[in-house]
Length: 356
Ligand code: DOR
Ligand code: ZN
Image 1 (tube, rainbow, N blue to C red):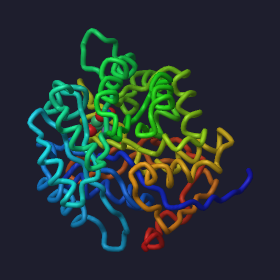
Image 2 (cartoon, helix red, strand yellow; image 1 turned 180 degrees about the horizontal axis):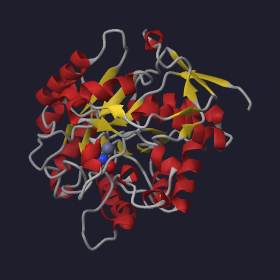
Image 3 (cartoon, rainbow, N blue to C red; image 1 turned 120 degrees about the horizontal axis):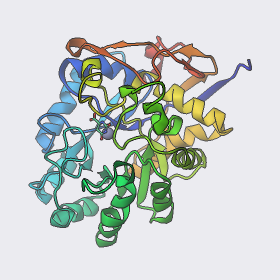
């Protein structure tokens, strides 16, 4: 086997679910071992709807962080029908909030308090445009008449295009894009429109959920799609466009909450995420573009500096652990559990090296 190493600007994760309490403390090191910053999703129970709640959550994350790890949480506000432009301005002024998240009410985990009518939230979107705060969009319709595999494509035309047209200065990230239609929409849209792509949507198509039986650890929202969509995502991620950047959507749920009658949506990829992205880029012959996707395009879009430290990956196959500890939540099953992954972090246990 060819040996190779790859040193890149230390990457960031532009879409991460860290949860709270003991579970947060358990999963945080899996992201902080490798990512310098991460955009932290606000879909806690109750959701993070105010600048004060975001600041308190930020403090809890830093309290749980091992002092030797260098990691900055970039906080988000959860938009509800009651969010005001003044709250956006407070969040912007406070300094830890970088963006606000649009969950269509009922679209996914803990989204019941999300927006029910985008038109009514127009003053909030205008306040965000005025202060340069990006809107992070879970782009799926909740209309039960729309097939679950079509919910993203329908959202683009039914909701996202009118929103972008109505508030032209607004920066928008189509989070975890999963379809060819989504990729084309982003590519053809204005420079204020970008998208994050997960490792699991790059690596797997919907067949993974059904391979040899029902596999709940491959169930997430938006759900994995057909192979043609996966190929479009790989082309987008590895193609070098600054409109696409890394967002793991790592979303831990206890094993018992995944392997049950009504398993939760969410794939826990943090323990293997950068390794899996490297594998995808390697297989596409585009390792030279991993740094842009993982370390440059996100900061460029958000108007933040690049990280000054680096991360080294080695082409060395290692097995993904079967389970990872989740504190009181019990065991967590990581993406690709038990299978080999082609790339590894150099000396992954020496996270001290990444400080500074
Ligand atoms: O699969 C998902 N899990 N999709 C989401 O949008 C939310 C996430 C979670 O919080 O578990
Ligand atoms: Zn998410």
